[in-house]
Image: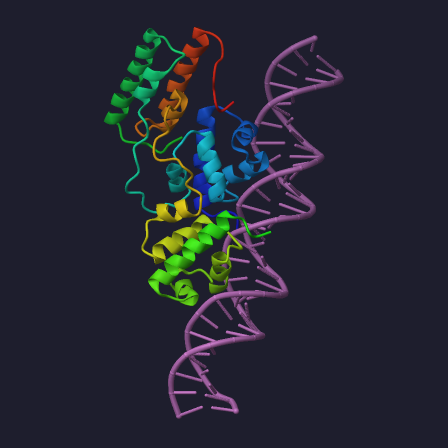
Length: 125
Length: 125
DNA sequence: ACGCAATGCGTGGCAGACTAAGCATCAGTA
DNA sequence: TACTGATGCTTAGTCTGCCACGCATTGCGT
């Protein structure tokens, strides 16, 4: 019934994205147009959202729709997926940071990339 | 009420594809694993199939899944990259950082913004 | 201590996605 | 004239995606 494996995996993904954005279920509900009760159920792996909801969530997260589809197990093979826009460009184009802050942020980012290049990806959490 | 405009458009598309392949609804049903009665309803615009069914149909037609999604109105006019993504979204979507690094980077960014001043735009909150 | 807003979660119920079974029609065959 | 068999369609029913509402808890301000 409920626990569908794919649903559970997607729920984990959604929850991690929401926590990264640092928002509550209700805030995400408002931003995406999906009810908060349903978001709760999806995060806990009870249901697998429809493509319409995936689309709405991708929009709220400013994330390419194909990523959402892939994460929900719909896009079995996504060969031509474009790489996500670079952080570096986003930082350079930001309007809220001054030059000093931008170069500091870029430095942190590059340090992180270099650091994780040395170590294997641990699926810890 | 079934007739949903988008459902009707997709129904026409599906029927034309089936006729191009020169197969019956029942044959397509066997090839895709979808019931023939449902295929009939979809072709007549009564229902809009779920992403799972779209995937199965695309596979039966040996057609890229993205084409199916586009025809069913799911892949709205979002060709690849978002034009001006926020830094936050860019960080979340990055593929080189792990979750821990992402939230650390986000923390630094938010600290900078708060330090700089006020509170301009954040699409999520 | 009291309220009060925000959080995550459970419930009831409606609508829609989907199927199994059967109806009606047409083509060919004897 | 039937008898097949294939086609598209309809109907009845089940399952589940999704929402409105409400509950219990936590945290913050007074």
